[in-house]
Amino acid sequence: MAEWSTLARPYAKAAFDYAVEHNALDRWSQQLAQVATVTGADKIARLISSSVVPVEQQAATLIEVLGDAIDEPCRNLIRVLAENRRLPLLPLISALFDQMKANREQSVDVEVISAFPLDSALSERLAEALRTKLERDVTIHTEVDKSLLGGVVIRAGDVVIDGSVRGRLAKLASAMNS
Image 1 (cartoon, rainbow, N blue to C red):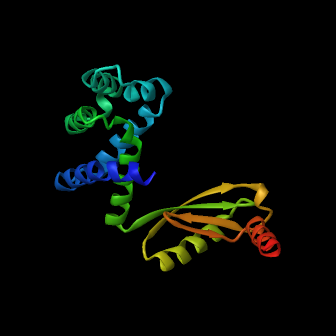
Image 2: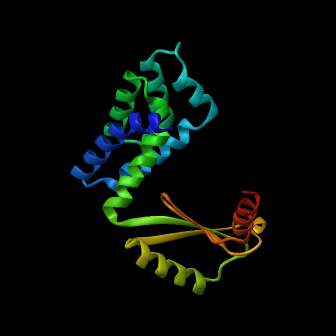
């Protein structure tokens, strides 16, 4: 996966720099998310990975499917990616772009998975603690997973905090088996 990331990063950086220069970070983020969603569809994924379909046709088809959801600069990015046979990188380019955007805005999306639904007061206390710890604005997305038994798993970018009962039991089992 590191190889894909290495290939996608210059394109994401170029799109990001363009978006910053034109004060269009949100617009580009939305467009790239739309492109990533469309390229995830089976037919489109096969098309953009095909070695027999001409790259011009791949780009034209993708642009046609996206229609008015993307503007001309985004269409140009798609054409450049097609010329370099890099269209399958679009979902990763979108993810890297959003990471760059979050870093610039000093914000982070945090996924909180718990064994039970979190009430708003607990969710807000957790968000405040994470704001302090991460020194960023925090947006919390919650999910319930009863298999955790208790506690929570928190994912914020590369940081994973496993405070679940299931996680603690797994660590205990691993320690006992070594």
